[in-house]
Every structure is written in C-alpha cells, then in structure tokens.
Length: 583
Image (cartoon, rainbow, N blue to C red; front, side):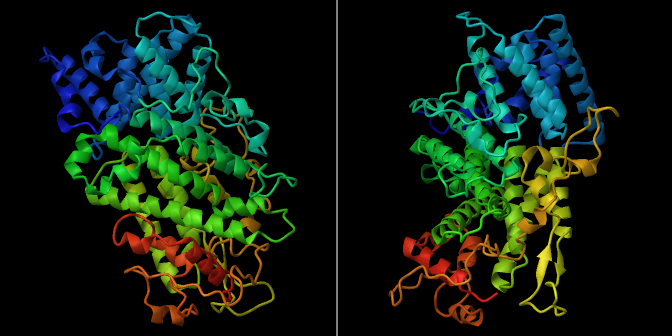
C-alpha cells in the first residue's frame, strides 16, 4: 500500500548527488532536481527515481536536452523572454538528434524517453502536430520491440512503454467517429487501455490492464482515468449522425463512456479517494513538498469529475438530441443536471483549495478540465435569476484566474484562457423573432457556437485560434480556415441563458415529478443560499433552493456538509420546481 510520503522522503533525492565538480555538473543536477520536483510521477513516470540523479551524466545528450527544455519553465514565474528562446533552441536540437537516431537506425530506450518528453513539451506549448508526430513515432517504434527478458533497464523500459500509452490517451490523435461504439472493444477486452477507441494495439507494448492490484500507487490510479478521458475526448469532438440513439439509450456513445467511467471508478482504491485524503486540511508547505503524491491526486480528481461534466454538457447533449422527435425523459433531465451539479461543484472546490494553499498546478489536462466547467458557468451567466447569474459569473472568474496563472508557464493554457475570454465576448443579446421588445421575459442570447465546440475539444482549445493545427503544412496541404468550420446547424445547440438543457425544444413545458398531494419536506438551505424571502421574490415560494442554486453552491466539503448534500427526494422536488418555472 502506498502511503503519503513524508517531507524527508520526497526530498531524499537532493541527497543522492555528489558534490558538483564543475559548473556543467551542477547545471545537470539542477535539471534533474527540477524534473523530480515538478514533473516526475505527476502522473507521468519515465525514470527510476532512486537512480535518476546518479545516472544523468551517463545519459544520451538528446535526453538531457529534452529534460532541460521541459524543466526550464519551472518554477512558475521564472520564465523570461531569454529563457523562452533558450527553451525553444533546446527542444529544436533535441528533436533533430532524436530523428537522426531514428533515420539512422540507432534507436535506444533514451530515444523513446526523449520522444515522450518532447511530446509533452510540444503539446504544452501549443504545437499539437509536432507533439502527435513524436508520440506516434514512439508508438510505432514500441510496436516493433520484440518480447524480451533482457534485465537491462527493465524498470525504465516498462515505465516508458506505459507512458507511451498514457500520452496516447491524454493527447494523442483521435479518430473522428459518429459513434464511439463502432470502435469500442468487445466485452472480453473492455479493460484493456491499448484497445480503446483510436489506439492501435501494439504488440510490443504490454496491455494496460485495469485490474485490482493492491499495490497500485497514486500515479497508476491517475493514469487509469486517462483511458476514459480518451473516450470522452472522442465523444466531445464527434459529429452525431441522424440515426444515433439518444443519450439514455444503452447503445449510445454517452452510455458507453459513462459505463467505462463507472468501471474505472469502482477500481480506484479507497485509500486514494478524497475521504481519506483531505487535501484542504494540508499545509501549503506539505503540499509542495509532497507534489509527487498530491498532484496525481488532484489530476485524478479533476479528470474523474470532468468526464461526467463533459458528458452532460448542455451543448453536447443538444447535439445528440438534434434529431430527437419525442419528449426528453424527466428522469434523464434530473440525472443529467444532478451529475453536472455535483462534478462542477467539485472542480470549483479544488480550485478554491489550490488558490488558498498557493499550490502551483501546471498540467494542461487539468487546465482543460477547468475550461469545460467554465463554459457551463458562462452559459448560466445570462439566466434571468439574479442569484444564479451572480454565482455563475463568480465561478467563471475563478476558472479564468486559474487559467491565467497556469498560462504563465505553458502557452497552450494561455491560449485556452484567451479563447475562453473570446467566447465570453461573443455572447450577444437578441430579440425573439417577430417581437420588438427586449424585456427580461423575452430576451435570448447567441454565442460563437463553433468556438464553444472547439473549446470542448482538447487539441483545439489549446491553439491560438482554437482550431486545427496546420503549422507543419505547406501550401499544397493547407486548408482554408472556413473550410474547416463545422458550424453548420450548430446554432440550434446554443442554450446560453437556460439552466442546463431546460431550454431545449424537446423538454416538456409542464412536468410533474411527484404525484399530487405528496408531502415532501423542503430541503434545508445552506448558509450561503438566498433567504426564503428572496426565493419568494423569484417565484419559488418556500420550496427551498432551486436546482440551479444548488449547482452553483457546489458540493465541496467547505462549510456545512449536511446542508451541501441533498437527498434523493429533494432532487426530484427541485427538478419539478425547475421545469415548471415560467420563462
């Protein structure tokens, strides 16, 4: 069982190195220490920590250059224009040396490790195609490795092969598909990460088995969620065919991803869950000293909570209901909104913890999780209800604050923040057709739907224009940006100003969740919730907080937890109340 490492354990590597005999050796040791502090096992593990510093001087030059390009941006706030130029030069030199080894047939383990480091570097700097080329090259080479019992570097070789698979899931190229199920594995191999949609099974790479190994560590658990992360990436980027089943159908891509998410969730050991890891009760010094534990913990929490949040994103659900000609089931509306409420609440809670503890977080995947939640807050920033609107605006700015800080380290995150602000600026108010008034009851909004969709797709959100990366193509291969737009018909999925999918045309106007005269006790109102008199003014009477209020109240453990979590009956009553509000 892995326990939270002590501060003395996490700093043990600083005692491994010998006294530097030269400036070059001192610089090399500084590079190694920075890597161990800011990147090792967070959640990517490429090297054996116990021998890493001692072995640096004997490692291949392209690996050293790749490490330097990655770590020179740390610690956060230390980046200057001079360092930026130096970092780009280091990466360019490393890339050239790696490709020389590949083309000349001199591939070593360090070559694959360098390709992994360069893929991480390039994606974080917004060079999506270059990143994909590196990880695809590494994957192809790994595919060609014959089975071996060679004990030389066996541990690091296994680390590297596993990292290739994880990076494929996190940021590898995804195959566009109208539905996930067409490429999903059969029931006999649903737990194999190397067979998930879009990832070829590499015979030289050991299968990524999601078993119940009691010796799992926190980085392994974090990596496990990457399998479903890849699936939900495809879900977000796929066009929906007219004959696609609705989300609640067991054959739908929505259901497939949700089932896989549950399968991995139930395998996560209890010792790595929030209840036994109260990060909000740790000191800032402890969190920073034990980054190799707490950053993978946060990574797993962010990805775990964002997957259902993205699944139930109103824009993506509306796309999947485009051709639906019946009434959306009330229970699905309830389930969808509750899931979005719970998961987005946790992301905001963890952002509050990160801010309060001044914990530097630099992972672009976690940043994209925040972008996804921010788009939901943006949608609700234009609802009629004043309390809901103010909470949404507050949540949106919390997301922007996190992205600005992380963007100071990685250009891809800075691009996400810029694109998100552009999305906010694109929202305009319009009057309904055939009405000249602009009253609060009749107002509606439009948004740049193509930009919204691009922000939900990881490898587009981190580009300066939130679009396809064509930086490696010449004139004979480039496409006009207008040709790449898939915006046709996307405006009908625009639900800005409505709570969840309540504004969709297939949502019934008048729905009863409970039988008449059911005596359901109202929920207790959290301390920060509006008073009952204010709720009366909003037309909610004494029914307790609205479902939208609960969404923005969050479900994190700050404050009175007994008031934060509501019972099953309370959800039903809140949904009933929500659906019958006059627009």
